[in-house]
Image: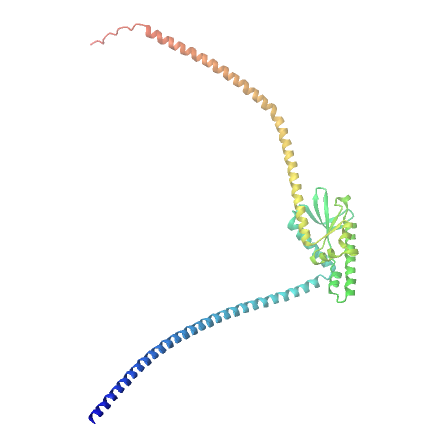
Length: 340
Protein backbone atom coordinates (compact mmCIF):
# COMPACT_ATOMS: atom_id res chain seq x y z
CA UNK A 1 0.00 0.00 0.00
CA UNK A 2 2.76 2.38 0.92
CA UNK A 3 4.64 1.41 -2.21
CA UNK A 4 1.62 2.04 -4.31
CA UNK A 5 1.12 5.43 -2.71
CA UNK A 6 4.75 6.31 -3.29
CA UNK A 7 4.58 5.32 -6.89
CA UNK A 8 1.45 7.39 -7.33
CA UNK A 9 3.10 10.41 -5.72
CA UNK A 10 6.19 9.97 -7.84
CA UNK A 11 4.16 9.64 -10.98
CA UNK A 12 2.15 12.71 -9.97
CA UNK A 13 5.34 14.71 -9.40
CA UNK A 14 6.67 13.71 -12.78
CA UNK A 15 3.49 14.77 -14.49
CA UNK A 16 3.50 18.04 -12.56
CA UNK A 17 7.11 18.63 -13.58
CA UNK A 18 6.29 17.89 -17.17
CA UNK A 19 3.28 20.13 -16.97
CA UNK A 20 5.42 22.82 -15.37
CA UNK A 21 8.01 22.46 -18.11
CA UNK A 22 5.31 22.64 -20.73
CA UNK A 23 3.85 25.65 -18.97
CA UNK A 24 7.27 27.31 -18.80
CA UNK A 25 7.86 26.54 -22.44
CA UNK A 26 4.46 27.88 -23.37
CA UNK A 27 5.10 30.95 -21.22
CA UNK A 28 8.45 31.56 -22.95
CA UNK A 29 6.83 31.07 -26.35
CA UNK A 30 4.03 33.39 -25.34
CA UNK A 31 6.59 35.97 -24.18
CA UNK A 32 8.48 35.66 -27.46
CA UNK A 33 5.24 35.94 -29.42
CA UNK A 34 4.27 38.96 -27.32
CA UNK A 35 7.65 40.57 -27.93
CA UNK A 36 7.35 39.81 -31.64
CA UNK A 37 3.85 41.28 -31.65
CA UNK A 38 5.16 44.34 -29.79
CA UNK A 39 7.94 44.76 -32.35
CA UNK A 40 5.52 44.38 -35.22
CA UNK A 41 3.14 46.77 -33.55
CA UNK A 42 5.96 49.30 -33.13
CA UNK A 43 6.92 48.85 -36.76
CA UNK A 44 3.32 49.23 -37.83
CA UNK A 45 2.95 52.28 -35.57
CA UNK A 46 6.07 53.88 -37.04
CA UNK A 47 4.93 53.05 -40.56
CA UNK A 48 1.52 54.52 -39.83
CA UNK A 49 3.14 57.61 -38.29
CA UNK A 50 5.40 57.98 -41.34
CA UNK A 51 2.47 57.59 -43.67
CA UNK A 52 0.39 60.00 -41.64
CA UNK A 53 3.32 62.44 -41.60
CA UNK A 54 3.70 62.08 -45.37
CA UNK A 55 -0.02 62.61 -45.81
CA UNK A 56 0.16 65.69 -43.59
CA UNK A 57 3.12 67.04 -45.58
CA UNK A 58 1.34 66.42 -48.85
CA UNK A 59 -1.79 68.00 -47.45
CA UNK A 60 0.22 71.03 -46.33
CA UNK A 61 1.99 71.23 -49.69
CA UNK A 62 -1.32 70.81 -51.48
CA UNK A 63 -2.87 73.50 -49.32
CA UNK A 64 0.08 75.80 -50.04
CA UNK A 65 -0.20 75.14 -53.77
CA UNK A 66 -3.94 75.65 -53.66
CA UNK A 67 -3.42 78.94 -51.83
CA UNK A 68 -0.78 79.97 -54.38
CA UNK A 69 -3.01 79.01 -57.29
CA UNK A 70 -5.93 80.82 -55.73
CA UNK A 71 -3.76 83.92 -55.32
CA UNK A 72 -2.61 83.68 -58.93
CA UNK A 73 -6.19 83.17 -60.06
CA UNK A 74 -7.30 86.22 -58.08
CA UNK A 75 -4.46 88.23 -59.61
CA UNK A 76 -5.32 87.04 -63.13
CA UNK A 77 -8.98 87.69 -62.54
CA UNK A 78 -8.04 91.20 -61.47
CA UNK A 79 -5.97 91.60 -64.63
CA UNK A 80 -8.82 90.28 -66.74
CA UNK A 81 -11.19 92.68 -65.03
CA UNK A 82 -8.78 95.56 -65.60
CA UNK A 83 -8.32 94.55 -69.26
CA UNK A 84 -12.08 94.35 -69.65
CA UNK A 85 -12.41 97.86 -68.28
CA UNK A 86 -9.72 99.06 -70.68
CA UNK A 87 -11.52 97.43 -73.59
CA UNK A 88 -14.76 99.07 -72.51
CA UNK A 89 -13.02 102.45 -72.26
CA UNK A 90 -11.37 101.87 -75.64
CA UNK A 91 -14.72 100.98 -77.18
CA UNK A 92 -16.18 104.15 -75.69
CA UNK A 93 -13.26 106.19 -77.04
CA UNK A 94 -13.63 104.59 -80.47
CA UNK A 95 -17.32 105.46 -80.47
CA UNK A 96 -16.48 109.03 -79.56
CA UNK A 97 -13.77 109.10 -82.25
CA UNK A 98 -16.24 107.86 -84.85
CA UNK A 99 -18.67 110.55 -83.79
CA UNK A 100 -15.92 113.14 -84.08
CA UNK A 101 -14.91 111.88 -87.53
CA UNK A 102 -18.39 112.13 -88.98
CA UNK A 103 -17.94 115.74 -90.24
CA UNK A 104 -15.78 115.57 -93.43
CA UNK A 105 -14.02 118.84 -92.61
CA UNK A 106 -12.87 117.55 -89.24
CA UNK A 107 -11.57 114.37 -90.91
CA UNK A 108 -9.59 116.53 -93.31
CA UNK A 109 -8.06 118.52 -90.46
CA UNK A 110 -7.15 115.30 -88.65
CA UNK A 111 -5.50 113.87 -91.78
CA UNK A 112 -3.49 117.07 -92.28
CA UNK A 113 -2.39 116.94 -88.64
CA UNK A 114 -1.19 113.34 -89.01
CA UNK A 115 0.63 114.31 -92.20
CA UNK A 116 2.36 117.24 -90.53
CA UNK A 117 3.42 115.03 -87.62
CA UNK A 118 4.94 112.44 -89.96
CA UNK A 119 6.83 115.07 -91.96
CA UNK A 120 8.17 116.73 -88.81
CA UNK A 121 9.40 113.41 -87.42
CA UNK A 122 11.39 112.34 -90.48
CA UNK A 123 12.46 115.37 -92.52
CA UNK A 124 14.26 118.60 -91.60
CA UNK A 125 11.94 121.63 -91.72
CA UNK A 126 13.60 123.17 -94.78
CA UNK A 127 12.73 120.13 -96.91
CA UNK A 128 8.93 120.30 -96.58
CA UNK A 129 6.17 122.87 -96.44
CA UNK A 130 2.49 122.84 -95.49
CA UNK A 131 -0.25 124.48 -97.57
CA UNK A 132 1.89 125.10 -100.63
CA UNK A 133 0.18 127.63 -102.91
CA UNK A 134 0.33 127.43 -106.71
CA UNK A 135 0.16 130.38 -109.09
CA UNK A 136 -3.63 130.22 -109.42
CA UNK A 137 -4.11 130.16 -105.64
CA UNK A 138 -4.81 126.42 -105.34
CA UNK A 139 -3.26 124.91 -102.19
CA UNK A 140 -2.00 121.39 -101.60
CA UNK A 141 -1.71 120.01 -98.08
CA UNK A 142 2.09 119.66 -98.24
CA UNK A 143 5.07 119.45 -100.56
CA UNK A 144 8.39 117.68 -100.05
CA UNK A 145 11.44 119.28 -101.67
CA UNK A 146 13.35 116.43 -103.29
CA UNK A 147 15.66 118.72 -105.28
CA UNK A 148 16.58 122.38 -105.44
CA UNK A 149 13.97 123.06 -108.14
CA UNK A 150 11.57 120.15 -107.66
CA UNK A 151 8.91 119.32 -105.05
CA UNK A 152 6.58 116.38 -104.48
CA UNK A 153 2.92 117.24 -103.74
CA UNK A 154 1.28 115.26 -100.91
CA UNK A 155 -2.45 115.56 -100.22
CA UNK A 156 -4.42 113.88 -97.43
CA UNK A 157 -7.69 112.13 -98.30
CA UNK A 158 -9.93 110.32 -95.80
CA UNK A 159 -12.87 108.55 -97.59
CA UNK A 160 -14.41 107.16 -94.42
CA UNK A 161 -18.21 107.42 -94.73
CA UNK A 162 -18.90 104.87 -97.48
CA UNK A 163 -16.11 102.66 -96.14
CA UNK A 164 -17.87 102.53 -92.77
CA UNK A 165 -21.22 101.86 -94.44
CA UNK A 166 -19.75 98.94 -96.39
CA UNK A 167 -18.39 97.48 -93.16
CA UNK A 168 -21.55 98.01 -91.13
CA UNK A 169 -24.03 96.85 -93.78
CA UNK A 170 -26.13 93.89 -92.68
CA UNK A 171 -27.29 92.95 -96.18
CA UNK A 172 -24.97 91.91 -99.01
CA UNK A 173 -26.70 94.24 -101.45
CA UNK A 174 -26.20 97.22 -99.14
CA UNK A 175 -22.58 96.24 -98.63
CA UNK A 176 -21.90 96.12 -102.38
CA UNK A 177 -23.68 99.42 -102.93
CA UNK A 178 -21.60 101.11 -100.23
CA UNK A 179 -18.44 99.50 -101.57
CA UNK A 180 -19.10 100.85 -105.07
CA UNK A 181 -19.69 104.29 -103.56
CA UNK A 182 -16.40 103.99 -101.67
CA UNK A 183 -14.55 103.10 -104.90
CA UNK A 184 -16.14 106.10 -106.59
CA UNK A 185 -14.95 108.34 -103.73
CA UNK A 186 -11.38 107.09 -104.12
CA UNK A 187 -11.39 107.61 -107.91
CA UNK A 188 -12.76 111.12 -107.42
CA UNK A 189 -9.95 111.92 -104.98
CA UNK A 190 -7.38 110.53 -107.44
CA UNK A 191 -8.78 112.69 -110.24
CA UNK A 192 -8.72 115.77 -108.00
CA UNK A 193 -5.09 115.25 -106.96
CA UNK A 194 -3.96 114.57 -110.54
CA UNK A 195 -5.74 117.58 -112.04
CA UNK A 196 -4.98 120.12 -109.29
CA UNK A 197 -1.55 119.29 -107.86
CA UNK A 198 0.55 117.55 -110.53
CA UNK A 199 2.17 120.60 -112.15
CA UNK A 200 5.66 119.98 -113.53
CA UNK A 201 5.62 123.43 -115.15
CA UNK A 202 5.47 124.93 -111.64
CA UNK A 203 8.26 122.78 -110.23
CA UNK A 204 6.36 119.69 -109.03
CA UNK A 205 7.15 116.11 -109.90
CA UNK A 206 5.09 114.39 -112.59
CA UNK A 207 3.31 112.39 -109.89
CA UNK A 208 1.73 113.02 -106.49
CA UNK A 209 1.10 111.13 -103.25
CA UNK A 210 -2.36 110.56 -101.76
CA UNK A 211 -1.98 110.11 -98.01
CA UNK A 212 -4.67 107.89 -96.43
CA UNK A 213 -4.51 108.40 -92.62
CA UNK A 214 -6.14 105.04 -91.72
CA UNK A 215 -4.45 101.69 -92.36
CA UNK A 216 -7.81 99.89 -92.67
CA UNK A 217 -9.06 102.29 -95.34
CA UNK A 218 -5.76 101.98 -97.21
CA UNK A 219 -5.99 98.17 -97.10
CA UNK A 220 -9.49 98.41 -98.58
CA UNK A 221 -8.10 100.55 -101.42
CA UNK A 222 -5.25 98.14 -102.10
CA UNK A 223 -7.48 95.08 -101.77
CA UNK A 224 -9.83 96.12 -104.57
CA UNK A 225 -9.10 93.90 -107.61
CA UNK A 226 -10.43 93.24 -111.09
CA UNK A 227 -12.30 96.04 -112.78
CA UNK A 228 -12.54 97.81 -109.42
CA UNK A 229 -8.75 97.85 -108.93
CA UNK A 230 -8.16 101.25 -107.37
CA UNK A 231 -4.36 101.11 -107.21
CA UNK A 232 -4.10 100.53 -110.96
CA UNK A 233 -6.42 103.46 -111.57
CA UNK A 234 -4.36 105.70 -109.27
CA UNK A 235 -1.03 104.69 -110.84
CA UNK A 236 -2.40 105.36 -114.33
CA UNK A 237 -3.20 108.89 -113.17
CA UNK A 238 0.29 109.30 -111.59
CA UNK A 239 -1.12 109.28 -108.05
CA UNK A 240 0.32 106.89 -105.46
CA UNK A 241 -1.76 106.11 -102.35
CA UNK A 242 0.19 105.54 -99.13
CA UNK A 243 -0.79 104.52 -95.61
CA UNK A 244 0.81 106.04 -92.47
CA UNK A 245 3.40 103.23 -92.33
CA UNK A 246 4.22 103.52 -96.03
CA UNK A 247 4.48 107.28 -95.72
CA UNK A 248 7.13 106.91 -93.02
CA UNK A 249 9.05 104.45 -95.19
CA UNK A 250 8.81 106.73 -98.22
CA UNK A 251 9.92 109.77 -96.21
CA UNK A 252 12.86 107.77 -94.85
CA UNK A 253 13.88 107.04 -98.44
CA UNK A 254 13.55 110.73 -99.28
CA UNK A 255 15.67 111.50 -96.23
CA UNK A 256 18.45 109.31 -97.61
CA UNK A 257 18.22 111.17 -100.93
CA UNK A 258 18.37 114.46 -99.05
CA UNK A 259 21.57 113.33 -97.35
CA UNK A 260 22.97 112.66 -100.82
CA UNK A 261 21.99 116.20 -101.87
CA UNK A 262 23.58 117.62 -98.73
CA UNK A 263 26.74 115.66 -99.49
CA UNK A 264 26.69 116.99 -103.05
CA UNK A 265 26.26 120.53 -101.75
CA UNK A 266 29.15 119.97 -99.36
CA UNK A 267 31.28 118.70 -102.25
CA UNK A 268 30.45 121.83 -104.28
CA UNK A 269 31.34 123.98 -101.29
CA UNK A 270 34.64 122.14 -100.86
CA UNK A 271 35.40 122.61 -104.55
CA UNK A 272 34.65 126.33 -104.26
CA UNK A 273 36.93 126.65 -101.26
CA UNK A 274 39.69 124.75 -103.05
CA UNK A 275 39.33 127.09 -106.03
CA UNK A 276 39.55 130.07 -103.68
CA UNK A 277 42.67 128.58 -102.08
CA UNK A 278 44.11 128.13 -105.57
CA UNK A 279 43.59 131.81 -106.29
CA UNK A 280 45.25 132.73 -103.01
CA UNK A 281 48.12 130.44 -103.89
CA UNK A 282 48.53 132.15 -107.24
CA UNK A 283 48.72 135.50 -105.47
CA UNK A 284 51.29 134.15 -103.01
CA UNK A 285 53.40 132.37 -105.60
CA UNK A 286 55.24 135.51 -106.91
CA UNK A 287 56.12 136.94 -103.46
CA UNK A 288 57.11 133.47 -102.35
CA UNK A 289 59.40 133.17 -105.39
CA UNK A 290 60.95 136.54 -104.61
CA UNK A 291 61.44 135.46 -101.01
CA UNK A 292 63.16 132.32 -102.25
CA UNK A 293 65.43 134.41 -104.47
CA UNK A 294 66.29 136.71 -101.56
CA UNK A 295 66.97 133.72 -99.34
CA UNK A 296 69.19 132.20 -102.03
CA UNK A 297 71.13 135.47 -102.39
CA UNK A 298 71.41 135.73 -98.62
CA UNK A 299 72.71 132.16 -98.53
CA UNK A 300 75.34 132.99 -101.10
CA UNK A 301 76.36 136.15 -99.25
CA UNK A 302 76.48 134.17 -96.02
CA UNK A 303 78.75 131.56 -97.60
CA UNK A 304 81.02 134.27 -99.08
CA UNK A 305 81.13 136.07 -95.72
CA UNK A 306 81.94 132.78 -94.00
CA UNK A 307 84.83 132.16 -96.39
CA UNK A 308 86.13 135.73 -95.92
CA UNK A 309 85.85 135.32 -92.15
CA UNK A 310 87.79 132.06 -92.33
CA UNK A 311 90.52 133.74 -94.39
CA UNK A 312 90.68 136.62 -91.95
CA UNK A 313 90.84 134.22 -89.02
CA UNK A 314 93.65 132.33 -90.73
CA UNK A 315 95.64 135.55 -91.18
CA UNK A 316 95.14 136.49 -87.53
CA UNK A 317 96.29 133.06 -86.47
CA UNK A 318 99.41 133.35 -88.64
CA UNK A 319 100.28 136.78 -87.20
CA UNK A 320 99.85 135.47 -83.67
CA UNK A 321 102.09 132.47 -84.30
CA UNK A 322 104.77 134.71 -85.90
CA UNK A 323 104.81 137.09 -82.92
CA UNK A 324 105.12 134.16 -80.53
CA UNK A 325 108.13 132.80 -82.34
CA UNK A 326 109.82 136.26 -82.34
CA UNK A 327 109.42 136.56 -78.58
CA UNK A 328 110.86 133.12 -78.03
CA UNK A 329 113.97 133.90 -80.19
CA UNK A 330 114.97 137.18 -78.33
CA UNK A 331 117.61 136.80 -75.41
CA UNK A 332 116.38 137.35 -71.91
CA UNK A 333 118.11 140.35 -70.16
CA UNK A 334 119.55 139.59 -66.66
CA UNK A 335 117.58 141.17 -63.89
CA UNK A 336 119.39 143.08 -61.10
CA UNK A 337 118.64 142.15 -57.53
CA UNK A 338 116.66 144.70 -55.62
CA UNK A 339 118.65 147.15 -53.43
CA UNK A 340 119.05 146.06 -49.87
